[in-house]
Image (cartoon, rainbow, N blue to C red):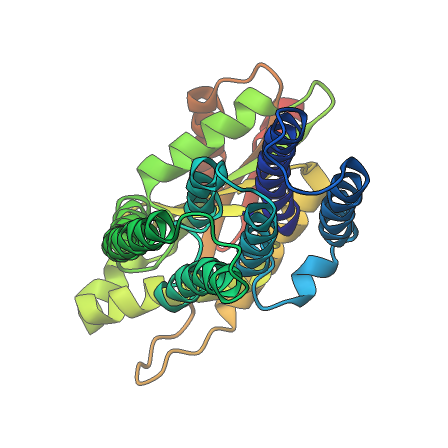
Length: 368
């Protein structure tokens, strides 16, 4: 998730917490109107304003992005402890209705159930117990505790509830940890599978000896280029054949022939620009596609490749007079790929017939 998405999620969580405060404040005023709140209306109004101010400060932190400066950008523990403190303050002004409002201690704990660590959750639970027990001890010390036995029962019930919440939170967090580990393991397996799929695609699309595209992949790429080309676009297409390749195999062996093929692939890759497509078409024959080309650029590219191949040096082999022949044609919108390859093949045949080590163009034959 992006930082903006995470921040939006944190603001939504804060809005839920603020909504909980609004509901509790509503119940507070119900307790005031029913005479169960032991302070004046003006004091209760001040308490309400202070609660609103505390939430406004938190809202300002989230909106300004300053919450991101903290180790916990969600400020979950801060919000939980603040909610517990306000809840204790509320209970301090309730008399016989204290037990009714005791249940709201659970609300901030549920808020932190999925987002607090075990230690932080336990600290918050201890803060609840210490706050409520201290409240009752303070009132007992000042002889203001109306029903000591009921207060003891409430403290015991609260202790059991908090203990259960801590145990349940530990179980939930352990389950989340196991799920997180399984998700990471699944992600690792998916990454491995994607890597194997990419390797398989490379194997399917690549000629093992030269590292160039194979014939099948070239035909797929060329067909796609023809499908998406515009009306004013022209592509260059050339069939390239290494001269006297059978003689090299017969005189020096097939290993030498393989080295010649690899040398041509290296020379051609160095001569071509990014986006040009070169593939092994079969045996000692290669096919070249130059997107966004014309007759002059195609001829220049093939001649440059021919001259570079003549100058290639083979390590450990005394193979002389390396050369190639090329047949060139142009592709326009509406051209059929098979027809274009046939034109290039006829031009290649003419280059071979005229003495090899040359580039012949299909448009030259058309002009003649």
